[in-house]
Image (cartoon, rainbow, N blue to C red):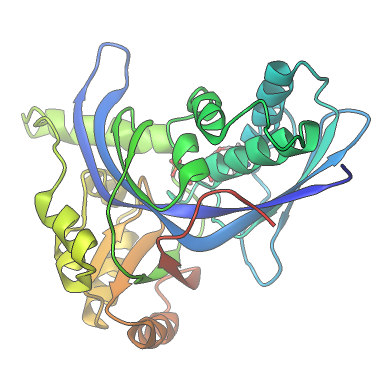
Length: 309
Ligand code: ATP
């Protein structure tokens, strides 16, 4: 096999319920993941040794300067894990073309890891009945990060635990999104830390999170307005506390007609829901003019996870 290319989507968390901090430092989460049509593309090619190249996708303004090209890159770690499992040497060049903002709360690194899992498994084992199934790849991915299994799976899914135990959710139709990216990322651990700090300061213990019934009903019936009201992110106050300018972005989106608005994951990307594709186009145009974001990107969901192209 000469080269394998995989396209992998970004995610937005429709609900991110953050429970109390556990003894192991993680939080118990209720996480409704939703894959959207904003894609990174990863190509895996045979090479003398493991190497990683990262560039911005055409027409994308993603700043790739901070993305590691050594073993710090989650895609490289994914390649090594697949090689170990298949008993081969990780002799692969990974070329990553990024459209998913870096440190933007849309799980770009996890997406690249998922793409590398799928690409390398295919590169090193192209039998009709491959040794590693999708489930195996999701399980391997869970060792790399709690968002990785979802990037393999795609669609819409509920994650519990650290977010890695997934159940696909029933959805109907397509939802139309507008994303406002920000200049510079937010560190996920820093946002969780700020969430804990704010809770301590307010003297509040976090309630045990549970899946929103309202949200699941809106998804199952394709009710965009219902989904817009049910969107919830427990990390949002922390992201706003670390990056107060996001409040302006969220307000602008709501004022310009979004039927739902929230910070995506740990931020700083903001996600806006529109009722129709046309509304999304209008909203994107208006937000672009408002000057409250680095870049405005439209996408729809749900879309499949890491897919061979
Ligand atoms: P999440 O939503 O999962 O919290 P994020 O979208 O906020 O993540 P990422 O883009 O995944 O953040 O990147 C977080 C950090 O991970 C980066 O600052 C970078 O140092 C590191 N990283 C490792 N591999 C990658 C990769 N392939 N792409 C982007 N960042 C990577």
